[in-house]
Amino acid sequence: MVRLLRVVFLCALVSCLALPALAQPKGAPPPDAEGWIPLFDGQSLAGWQLRDKNGPNGWSAKDGVLSNTAPSTDLVTEMTFTDHELHVEFRLPRGGNSGVYLQGRYEVQVADSAGKPTSKYMCGAIYDKIAPSKNAAKPAGQWQTLDIKFIAPRADRQGNVVQKARITVTLNGVTVIDNAEIDGVTGGALDNNEGKPGPLMLQGNHTSVDYRNIKYRPLRVGWPDDKLFTPLFDGKTLTGWSVRGPAHGGKGRWEVRDGAIVGTQDPPGIGGVLMTEKKFGDFEIRCEINPDWGIDSGLFLRTTDQGACYQCTVDYRPGGQVGTLYGERSGGWLQQNPLWEKFYWPGRWNELRCVVRGQPPHIQIWLNGNLTVDFWDTKERLPAEGYIGLQVHRGHDWQGRLTRFRNIRILPLGK
Image (cartoon, rainbow, N blue to C red; front, side, top):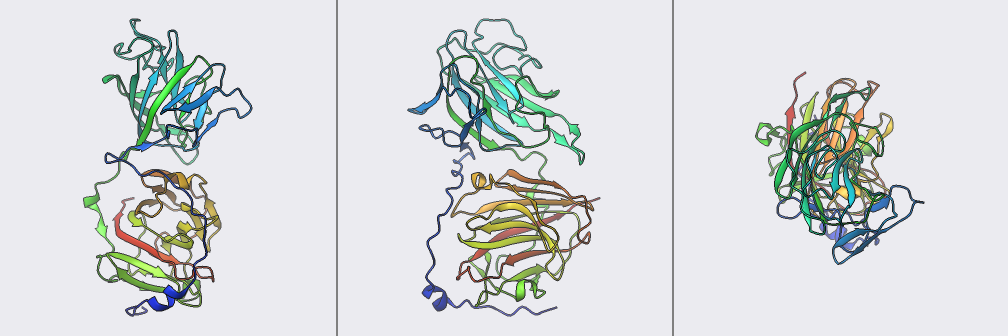
């Protein structure tokens, strides 16, 4: 085992480097104190697109209200979702009809239903599938609220649904559907790809409708309690970690700074991988990352001494991605996600969660609670056990920038 020497950064050298100006991505808006993230900025259609880009567009934004005037087409978020809570406020004219489609597949009916008997087609229903327990709709012309808890369906390696979607709907403060199972997609769905992430869709092809205060909060259904996890980093030293390889041409430079493991290149542009001294097979790992803009880094899963691994990317630079899956020396890109920027908080600590199970493995990655990777491998690319690694990529474009990891903890999983 290579003994890791205490590393002191060349601060004077780094401070002298001229860092080129790079156009940093805007990223996701930070959550509020209760964890809610807005999907509508109140003044534009940013983050939304028409279901049919060539269809009629009656949507407009003004003074915090998203309005649709018929004839129009459905409006779809660029973001996709798995398990989440959703808050939506809406206002309908007399006889109005619209719908809120979760994952673009399951419609919660939005309709002028005040005073009508309950049915599978009234406000708050899962269209044509589940009738609300009571009529909680307000008269047309008034603002109303929908609060939804949605647990997405689960699918197996072949794409077969093994657990159906479940939903709780609260209309105007009254729970009208309580943890009910949804048997398949509803009419007007974007697709039938149950078990895959999907967008939020607002129906626009019936009547005029107004929406406002649209926001979501990721749900962490089935996530193990953090108390079950074992820390891999004590926050003070590099005990339990060492550099092997030399992967990426060398060792890189590693130290502990302000409770985080901080890595950078060893001039002139030599990278490296800091690895745990212990191997892991099936596991869940959680950590926080806060890389400088313009670097290429990664969280290595089941890595070998030579640095071959499944890599959760921390490629935070132009053209890069964070929270996606790359086969380092084992196949290249395995699963990308161009929507990663919509889940990332620039300049802040971001949470990564990775689950690796089986051989060949099923690998899932969450970025700030949002599923970004759901990959079923069909090849045994690597051994069933390997180290956890933190990477600094070699090359001549880093120029002193840092990658940072903290709060690294792991939970071995049973068979």
